Length: 229
Image (cartoon, rainbow, N blue to C red; front, side, top):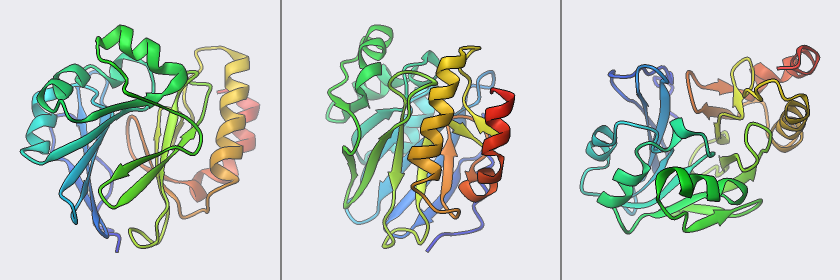
């Protein structure tokens, strides 16, 4: 059962947002006042195992949230520096956690962090969160190896839950920094891999800012294409 008291509104230095999702509990925290990155900690209440999505910054805060529980994986949604500044410290504190990233971005993440990407994932791969699975959905354009993570399990939540990194936000797709070809790829893959695949009640969690629902954004896809960002 989804707890609708959760709003998804968090700010650096503020309290995390906590959302029970059946046998999973989601904790959303914002880090770094300048970049205001979102980090997501998923906890399986049946096995007490955890997965962290984007060890973006402030490792001491992330490690406090993890506590003495078993962190089984650290997923980096894409190669940009602001999404993995705490990766080395979190991995050092939890050496048994598998470092996961999209295959095309893995080399860059390794070069920037000095941390080995132990699982290079692509379309249809899964990341286990205890008894549940996150399905990897590659969405290129923001970076070549950007990935989204889909939790689509009615036993956990009646609606799909989607972690989009910087590929999709309320109000538009992620930046492609003036690259028209990359924008066309990104908006095309967001449409075919996310909007065409998933229902309107899909709740999505981006790399910065507030959460969204696919149904609220779907009517604006043509507008995004026309404006070019």
